[in-house]
Image (cartoon, rainbow, N blue to C red; front, side, top):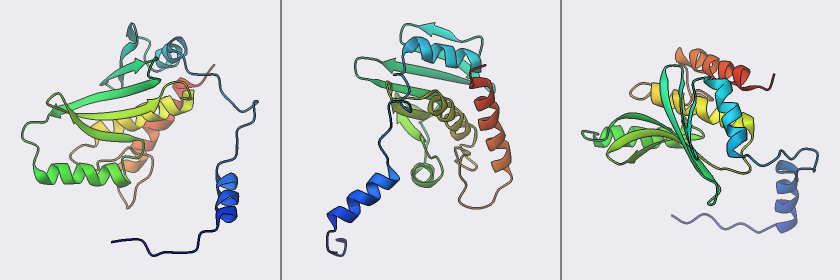
Length: 180
């Protein structure tokens, strides 16, 4: 179904975009994320962090997390294995796609290599420490809430008892991840 046509107001659209997405001043710009900086942030979340080249393995809230990076492609991916993809029903897949649209936020459900994963994918160089920490918290929450709330814990569209617990996880990670 096509969208109804409306007159185009380029100046108004540009002004709205400028107000919503102001250009960052040089003082606001964070330095590019590097693997060493990422390692420092991740070590604050899990002192037992393991690094193998551009990949990291850590545990957050008893949940194993794998982070792979590709500096040449300027990408990173944080992943939590949830279960085998074998036996996922159409209803399971539909529910996960709904969650990807409204409650998983920056994390996503994905299927790859015969497994169901919770993932957070972001360009590497513009990634800020707070985004990395939030993305990890959301990914862990998406994995933990599979089969129930299907939520990253950031925003809930409805009521539920687990929102407070999920928010506590995000706050604990933010606190641990802050520079001391």
